[in-house]
Image (cartoon, rainbow, N blue to C red):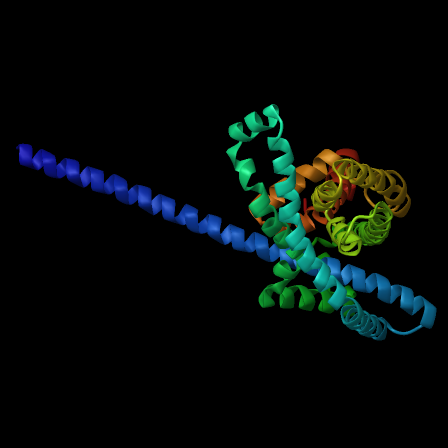
Length: 355
């Protein structure tokens, strides 16, 4: 009798294990597939942003020359390729030298700051309570070398880059074909509203891109000039670094300021404060003067909402998600405003979703 009970108990336990495993494996597989799908959607969205950029430049050229959309996009691509080749050919030697020097100087700057902190009693206590700070000097240089190569590493994957380029090129050359295809997914009565939403979405993203690139250029020039006036070494590469990271609002400028502050502190302790003030003034100018002027036609993003989207995207997708988080937030706000607020709450007849 006891043997039969033991066998039943063993079978019951085995059944529970099998049920648990059978339930867990599909969930894990679903999460893995969701992660891959999310990454794919982010890359497609990046391709859409590229198409919007190319289409905007081609539209400007088309108005000036009267050429067709295809020829305008082709000329824009040729001009961009020539500009990139010239830029790499002219600036790659000094940039490579400054990047190498920057990777050597940052650990020295971090080590010197830690040595200055250790000279004070409170500094010793602080370092003992936070032992991870002792490794800052060793890892900071490596960290910023990785950050400075974010775009190269992200787009370096051949498959991802090809997907982004092909999506961008196909959409830029024949945008109306794909817009009409999306509109036809909706009932006939909702197609005019769907077209209106897509046009507004494209316009908002186009102006957001304009604002970002203008901000990147202004931030890069002001940063390089300001650091050069302060006598900070590697001002040119730090300006490029600041310009690139400006594409990611709020998070990028903070990251770009740290190496400059460290190098300033390495020369003179008070110089680090001057560099921090310089970056603060530049960000105030960019946030309260440049961005409001350039992005008057774009969606105004609440800072908290933007930061939340950046955190969520970076956790779920990684660096690529952080890069596209803000334009995704722009698209989300446009959709919420036009589809839900205007279409459902204020005027149900304007709803885009099928009834």
